[in-house]
Amino acid sequence: MDQVSFDPLLFGQRLRHWRRQAGLTLEELGSRVDRPAPYLSLVENGKREPRISLITRLAEALGTTTADLLTAEPPNPRAQLEVTLLRAQEEPLYRALGLPHLKPYAKLSDTAITHILALYERLKQASAQAGGSVQSARRANVSLRRELEAVDNYLPEIEDVAAGLLTAVDYPGQGAVPQALLTALAKHAGFEIHQDADVPESLQSITDLERRRIYIPQRDALRTREARTVILRTLGHFVLGHEDPKSHEEFIRQRVHANYFARAVLVPESAAVMMLREAHARRDLAIEDVKEVFYVGYAMAAHRFSNLITRHLGVRIHYVRSDREGTIWRAWSNDGIGLPEDEDGVIVGQRLCRHWGGRAVFASDQRYGLHCQFLDTPAGTFFETSHVLVDDLRQHAVTVGTDFEGSRYLRGRDTDLHATSNCPDPACCRHPSKELAARWQSKVWPSLHEQPTLVSIRATADIDTVALYEFLDSRV
Image (cartoon, rainbow, N blue to C red; front, side, top):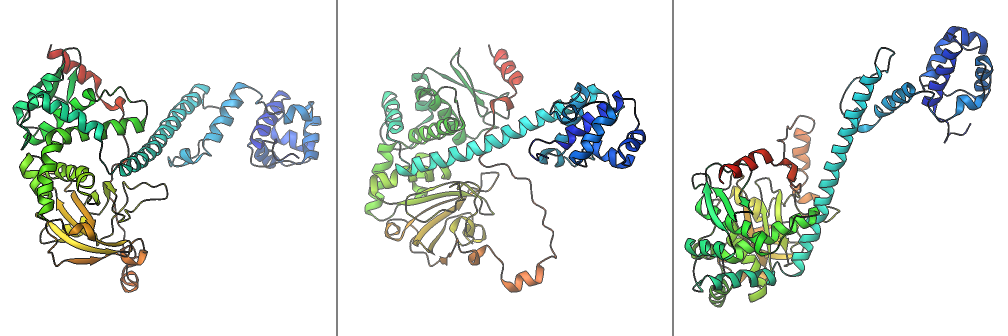
C-alpha cells in the first residue's frame, strides 16, 4: 500500500460511514471479513492500518468499492470535523496545553467541535505571531547593532539636526541646556509641553497632533531629568521625520534615533567635545564629569560619552548595560573585547562573565560609587568603569571600558583591581567545580522568576486606546 497517500484516520472514517450505510454492527461486519470487532474498531479509529487484501474484503462486504474506501475525501462534514479535531490534538502546541484527549463521541455536537477548532486556530495564529515577532526583533537588534558599530555609534545627521535646533534657540555653547531653552526648542518645532497627572501609566507621553501638544506626567510621577529626556525623545520622532513604522527593525531604529536625538540636545556635541578634549589632554576622561556639567543621568552621560569619544578622540570602547545576574540589556563595542552573543549574533539577553565589571560591581565596595578594574581576556587587557544605577528600579549596571591603550586617558586607571576572564571557555565561570557539582548535583530545585523577553516589542494593540482618546478628549 502507498504509505504516502494512505491515511488511516480518513480510511477509518470512510469505513465507519459505509458500515453505517450498510446497517451493520462491528460484530456483523467482522463475521463477514473474519476479523474480530475490537480489531475493526481500531481500524475505524485510525489506530490500525489494514492490509490491501482486507480492504478488498471490506469493500465487498459493504457493497462498495476499494476506491470508495481509499479516497482522500472525508465521507461527510461531520467526519471532516472529527478528523480535524483528532489531528489538532496530535500537534505539539495542543499537547502543550496538558489537556486530556478528547474523543469526538456521537453526543459531542458539530457546534462544539467547531468552537474548539476555531479557538485552537486563534491560539496557533497568536503563537505564530509571537514567535515571528521575537525572531523579527532578534534580527532587527542584530542588524541595528552592527550598523551602529560600523559608525562607532556616532550619527552625524542627527548631530546636525540637534545642533541646528540648539542654534535656533540661542544655546550659549557651553554647559547644561536650561529648561527655558527646551521649552523654546519645542515651540520652535511647533509643539507645546503640558504636564498632566492623568497621563496613563503605560505611556511616557501623548502627542495631540491636531493641537500640537505633548503631554507628559507631572513631576510627582516623573523626575525633572527624566521629564527632559521624555520631551526630547518625543520631539525627536517629529523633527527626524518619523512615520508609522512598517517593521520591527524600523520601529527599533526610530526609537534608537529618537533617544540619540535627546542625548545630542541635552549634551550638545560642540560643548561636550570641548570639555572632553581638555580632559583627554590631562588624561582625566570621566563619565561623571559629563553627568554633572550637563545635568543628565549617569546612563545618558555614559551613552553620550560612547557617542563621542571614538569619533573625536580616537579612544575605542565597549558599552554594556546589564542587570545583577549579568544579563545584557544593551551593548555595543568597537574595541574588540568580544561581547557574548548567540549563534544568531544576538547580544541582548546573553550573560556576562562573572569577572567582568558589569557583574563584579554588585559585589564591590564601590557598588554605589564607581568600580574600576583592569580585565585580562583572551582578546587582550581592558579597563572598565562600572556604576549601578540606584535610581533605576531594576538596579542595572552601566559599564564603559576601553582597551589597554585607551586606558591611559581615563580616570580610575590607578586602580589596583585586576581580574581575569577566560570566557567563552565554560571552565571560566559557566560550570561549577567538580567538588561543588558533586556536593549539590541532584539536590537542588531552582525556581526562576518570570523574565520579560528582552528583545520583544510592545505592539500598538497593547495600548488602551479608549483611555488614550478619553484623555485627549477631556483636554480639548
